[in-house]
Length: 416
Image (cartoon, rainbow, N blue to C red; front, side):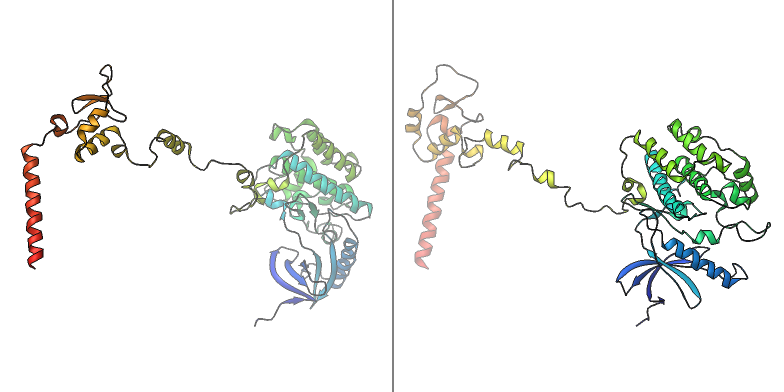
């Protein structure tokens, strides 16, 4: 039996993803009997001062662990196992926002505003508690099918910020979503998170980020100098108020941006209210199952209705044949069949007397023993014997041959 992989007291179940910072695992906490996510932190090669870096990791992780908000992923534990620092956090069933934007198509306007407003709520709470994220990007935003949005990697991003290193140290993190002050190696404050959220909002609205240089230097130049076109210039159905919100969030100078994230969240929700009630986030294609699932309640309205026992066509046919009480074919349940039966049973003369001649010959009459009678079904022609009332020579020969054969068979039976 293969031994279970463990990290501290946690049992690693499967690998969920891997990035520059480390690896994320689905794990089980045997002490509390719950499923969690474990994120390891790769510190090798990050800086020569490994001990200082690890101490900073614990400090920032503890700060993130104190954040308790519905729009922030909860950190349960922080520890080190065999020299590997890791975070134990809640496991979410959903997708990174980057997966929703992977097709390059914009999200529905109401959904984009709703996601941005929830991220702004989480940032407002963190900023109130003195924590700045510094790496807001689609990969750090989780979206669940029930519409809940959560921010990941609080605290870890602070260690990757440009605060450490000299003037010529490389820019770490995700430059495309960084604020101008971050790429210029200035101190990042809460308005830096607002700028990054503005970049994410722009990408949700248009399908592409506002700064898309061919290399790092081009991206940095655009972030510092370029004012991107208004979202409505890319997608015509975006209202002017959304253009105003994005422009204010993406202002180059921090003082020109929103004062705090809560103000941004209020503007986003005010704009969203004017759009009416949108479909839930679960209606997005990424949340739809690839295989159609059986809905046990889908047939309830149909089963509640009453239906006839037979098809309408069958019912009409039964009504049309109501005169056939025994369900016989017309050939055996008609007036002409009765006449033939009377002929072969020797009561043809009596049957003819019972039939009265109608006052006039009609299209639906027929001759029976010299008398015109009304046909009750389809017109029939009577045999020749019915018209003459006598047997022909052929009939007599057949009758005689039949009697002779019967006599021969009887004699043979007696002799044997």
